[in-house]
Length: 237
Image (tube, rainbow, N blue to C red):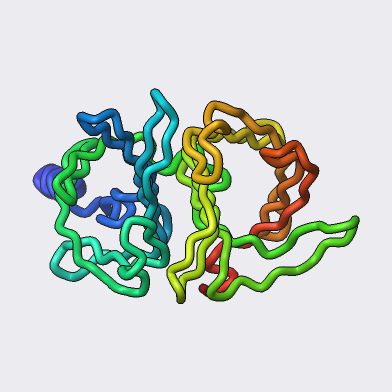
C-alpha cells in the first residue's frame, strides 16, 4: 500500500492539466524600440491588435490586427482585418514563428514583455458596437465589413474602426484602463485622429447586462454617448 501511495505521488503532477499554449499567449505585451517607439500587442480570444506609437512627443505610427490561432506546427497564424502599414495584407494570412519563455514573447524579431495575462479583465475580449443612442433613441447596429471593434486585455484597451473587406481604416485609440464600482476609465496613450488627446483620462459608466456591455458617459469631445457592445463570438464575426 505504501509503495502504491508513493507511486501515485510521483505520477500525479504529470497528470495535472497545464494551460494551453493559446491561453499562455493571451493578455497584453509591450516592446520598446531604440528610437523611442512603443509597441502594444493585445492577444485575446481569437483576435489581436498590434500598435506602434511614441509617448515622449505623442505620435501614432501604425496599427494592424484581426484574427489569430495556433497552427499544428506551433506557429501563430495571423489573418489581417486591418493594417495601416500595408493595407494590401488585409484578408491575407501569415504564419509567425514564436518562442515563449517566462514573461517574454519573441516573435517577428522583437522581444515582447508581458504586461498582463488577461486579468483582472472583467471586460476582456473582443467586442463590436451593436447599438448607439441618438436623439434619445437606441439604434441597433449590425456589424458587417464596416465595423468598430474594442479589444481589451486585463489592463489595456484599443478601439479600431475599419472595413475588413476594402482595407479602409477610419481611426483608433488606446492605452490602459480600469474597471471599478461600475466605472470604466480609459487612459489614452495613442490616438490616430489627434495626438493632442494623448494623456487624457475618460470616465464612463459601464454595466454587463445579458452578456452585453452598456457604455455611457461623455466621449473625448465632451459629447454625451450611450453605446452597447457585443462580443464578437455572440455576433458571429
